[in-house]
Length: 274
Image (tube, rainbow, N blue to C red; front, side, top):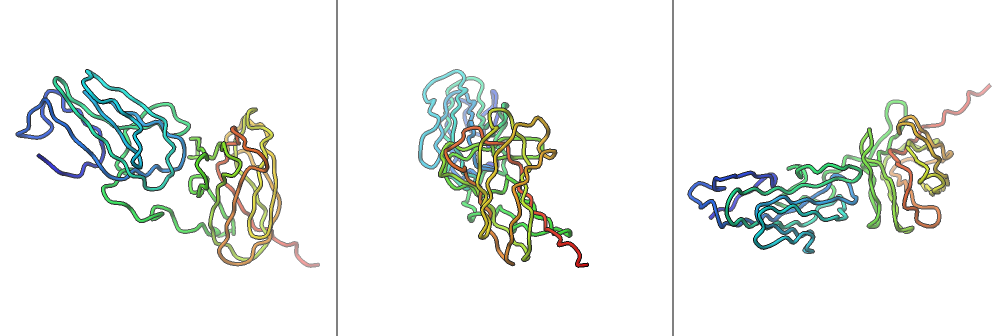
């Protein structure tokens, strides 16, 4: 009866039909498009429907609550990549009050929220158009690489939601890693991490590489906000131009990695000549 673009799946029709001229009972709907999470990580998808619903991500069924049910509330844990992924949602209503909602619980959160229109697309978006230009030095030459803009390599990198936004909190596979691309002038830079850690993450080791340099560090336990904790790794020398900075586990995987909010590079000012 109708084909249209819906910005989100969040409907309460009650005793009314979803469309003028349509019956209020025994109807169905299908939404097809692309889902893009704001960051990669483990999300909980949540469907609330009367009567039935099912969801596919990249062609794989993740929620299947079909048939006659007075009230469906179904959830499933999925690993989203932070890139465009195909999503299909089907809904069927029998009789009585009708409603349909698709939500998620982002990593590090506990309450479900409707998936916003900013994460749903009816046409595929060119890859990575949502990412900003490569970070560049500010007026003081300082370069910040926030965790939310890290490029994840592998399937098990997880994020946590802290005061200042997303923070990298763990990985299950020692081969997984994260990286940032940025632009910098030639010079020496001190490298530090801004982070928060708990006893479970204390002792986890990491390797950081940028240019021809490799630095190793070990997380410590702290109870302060992430912007109050600086983990100094050392100094590197960068040639001018495009750079890639990468962080990976130093040895084996560590399930409770520190909550890493950003990497900060600060130019080292040479001492004045006598």
